Amino acid sequence: MIINWILFAYAFVFMLYTTVLHTSINTPLQILLVLLYLISLRIPLKHAGMPWLRLLIIGFLHYIGHINLIFPLYILTLLYDIYTEENRKKSWVLSTSYALIFLGNVYLIKGLYDLLWIYAIECLLHFTTVALLTKATYSTLKQADRLKKERYLFTQQDSLTGLYNYEESHRRLEQLIRQKQGLVLILIDCTDLKSMNTTRGFQAGNFILKQMAELLQILFKDALFIARYGGDEFAVVMPLVADQSATSSLKLKLDSELPKLTGIQITYGIASYPLDGLTKDDLILLAENNLFTKKRESWLKREEHMLRSDKLRVIGELASGMAHEIRNPLTTVKGFLQISKANGYNIENWYSLIMEEIDRMSDLTGEFLQFSKPHSIDFRIYSLHECVLRVIALMESEATRFGHQIHYKEATEPVLVLMDQDKMIQLLLNLVKNACEAMEENGVVHMQLTSDAKSVTVVIADNGPGIPNEQLEKIFHPFFTTKESGTGLGLSICYKIVQDHQGTLEVESELGTGTRFIITFPLAQ
Image (cartoon, rainbow, N blue to C red; front, side, top):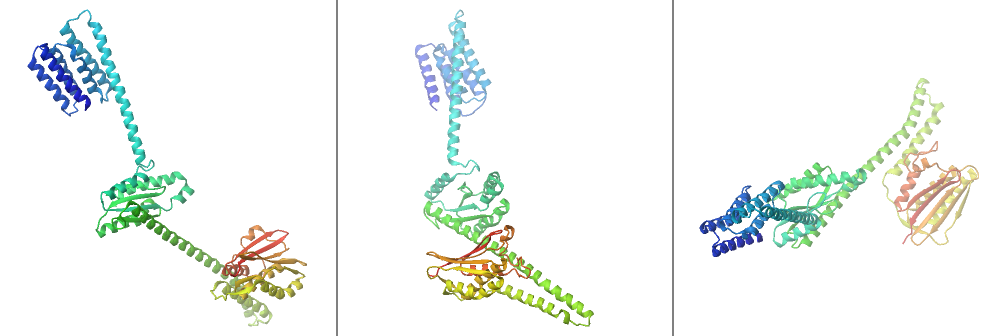
């Protein structure tokens, strides 16, 4: 724009100067040529022939004006024509043409034959210098402009997805609210992306983010803007529409189409302006709260599904174990009955064995029912020390029969626990009995009761052979046993009793040294 005014002014001054000094050989034609030159500058048409047309006009002006004062107009017009010219060859051809036209006019006007080669060198230098400086300036300014645009885009766009970034989304949302534009803000979270980054690497996660950005632009074509709001979160701002079908279509895309197309689970939170909030911060806060609520509901559903799956798995294991344990006695009884049929149904010889197998099934069923069926627990505050003393009294004779001793280290203070006393005695009795059965002759069972400000710990240790590491993880599993006559439900029942009393049960074992069961309960308030 500035160079246009300079060209206008210089062309007008040149016309006045030649008119006043009477150097022009044809004043009307000169005025016409100046007007044509000014018109060529005003025409916005980017035609390839326009620079050559201006060169011809200047050449005629130079000849008609009959004065070399027009030289700056040559230079300025050349600068004007080659400044934005991308074709380097065309720029140099144009510069050479300007020099030749100027020299031709100098020759016609001055007739300096002897000094013409000096003028030629000077002209070429002048026009070449203008061309070089013009192209260098244009290249520098263009590069600076490109860098400026890149910096501006970098402050606006996310480098991975090409969407607006967090800061730009806030600016645009603030601008839309200032303009009183009704809108719906949707915050979308890619729920499974973090686990995908862990299992499949960040490249897979980045691919999903790019795919998500493309799908959002396809599904929400009418969006006011779409942004990558965070690491795995996106923001979509839609115009507010009162039509119910549009709302249903929006939720269908979020609940069904988007998860199917991306293959990952998503959660979202929605808030609208001006229905849900009048400021940007209120709107974002509500959308984030709704997103958090959705994520919590999704997490609870997932946990419920996993819990249900675990329950079904446990039920399957219990049913399988129970069927296996009952089938063995049934097979034995069936075999004896088949033998008795061949002996006239006389079962006298196998009666005791049949009854033992039936009793075994009865005991197994009783323990299984005790383990599996829900029952009411009578919680009251009792002394855990008294429970330990009662267990020792019950087990003392049996321990003596095996040749074992029970050593008990009492607590220095009363230890009161909210418990079902019968279940607590059953728990301790099972553990002490297992310790006695695990040891060889002349074994020792150590029992210790300690407490702190919040909890009480019972330790039951033996000096038996210990439990191998591969079996240690399975001892609380239903139907797992190393005893020939065991059902494998004793320790499972113990574990359930401890859980019912809000306690913990741990086991430590070393081969050749013995096993320690550590039980912790909260103290009664």
